[in-house]
Amino acid sequence: MLDVCLLGTSGMMPLPGRWLTALMTRYNGSSLLIDCGEGTQIAIREKGWSFHSIDTICFTHYHGDHISGLPGLLLSMGNADRREPVTLIGPKGLERVVNSLRVIAPELPFEVKFIELTDLEETVELYGYQIKAFQVKHNVICYGYSIEIKRGGRFYTERALENQVPQKYWNRLQKGDTITEGDITYTPQLVLGPERKGIKLTYCTDSRPTKTIATNASGSDLFICEGMYGEQEKDTKAKEYKHMTFCEAATLAKTAEVSELWLTHYSPSLIRPEDFIGEARRIFQNTKPGKDRKSVTLEFDKDE
Image (cartoon, helix red, strand yellow):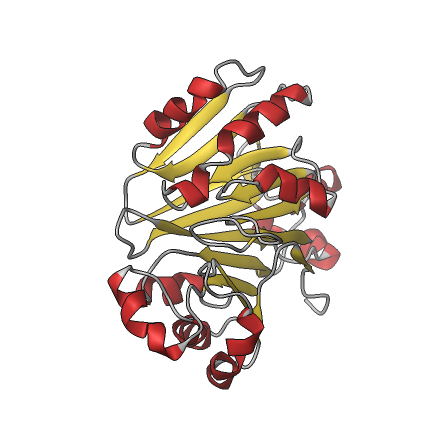
């Protein structure tokens, strides 16, 4: 299962009761963060989660409301006696940007690793996550992310026996290993059924609607997407500043056939997002206004 928490939902500037953009997930003892706006570590504390287990931090882009909380978070992680490496993922220029910010956090007791994205789409596998980054349409280079936890096929004892697979290899084959013994090779397909549906979360903010977003969000259990503006009269402003409205996000959710849509990254002028949710729900019924610390646990389909 995958724990998901929308730590902050504000765009541009933090507000009382609304921290800047950040998302956190937990899976199998590892935590992942997407974006790290000002106040992120406070939001983690308010949620009651720990930043000590954060192994991976992904950045959509390098505007201040998405990365300004990083130096303080890294310092807090170091003060909490973290020693394991932390991997940062983001658009080209990541190492230069982060090292500039680290002028105020120069000494850390753990290694910081960098994965810089240069292609339109890239996939990274870390800590049981399959992280797919895809470029979106903002006024600087910006990426959305799909986080997937794959699920292998069901183990069938009768298939293993039929294929004369030694029992001592069953466990390793079930985990996906391929084993060679002499001139015989045993593959997972000899004991497993077809791959089952896993868990998929897609996160996108600071972008105009694009076909790429819908394609990558396709079939997501949860789609978290920016809704900078709820008011219909803000359509022109959304286009000018390369952002999205509630209805545009809902249209993407409908096209992608996701299970649920959470809106986030609200304009500071949008004090009550729930007042504008009706029109979006007429497009995609399962649209919900995100709010700080809104959480869910995504689970594997029990029927598969």
